[in-house]
Length: 315
Image 1 (cartoon, rainbow, N blue to C red):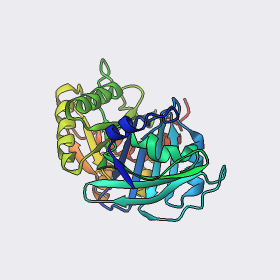
Image 2: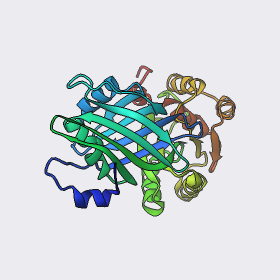
Image 3: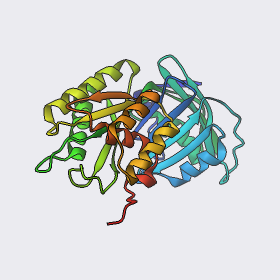
Image 4: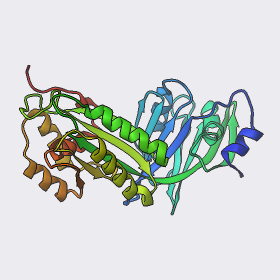
């Protein structure tokens, strides 16, 4: 076995057929039974072939999706035996290990997928080291462990920062998240605009709330929350700004149901507060309480891309 850091790998292996991934991140929650593996593929819109092959090949992969060049795999912790077959089951994850402060994913693949297992992933930002068991290439099997820091996923729902005459929640949220990433180094993963009930008489105009998603070390979660709160307090224009925080990989069904209901009808603050507390969703009231309704709905809609922009009401 050969163990190399990304810099050592780049220096030692300069073959023309190695194309490095941009970045690789691994996030989990305090249950530590699943891992969300996030890989930024070297090609502009990623590879549906890779998504399909990994799902077909490895029973450890519970879900896989592509968004541009961002590949996301929900991986069950554990070990399996891969039955690699050219074209049909060409690459996958053989083992997923969660340690005290790092996560190890063992990839195996045939031919080009084997090169990707070790060399392309091993050169990515975010990787601590790669452990190469078999180099792959040509018609050979490639097998390697890619080791990354253990991060926690933090999902933020935000609502009500603007007023009828000025402001925009989606832009303010994006600016805040970008500032935090630049200032603190916390990885800003996603920004999602969620359409809520269009006929809400209390809306500013479009009636949307915002999801921000970060990946941080466990010890940095509180600082992230405090940073968001202080920046919102400084720049919000509304007296009803609130946000919520959820740090599990799976969204509770009750919260999912609430998110859909908030797209179709009026919801009360009292109901939102009860549901949030019942599901261990952390609430932060910045300047008021009314924003909790949309903020909680955003959490409920997370991981349901078909629902983000969907409008249920008639004009």
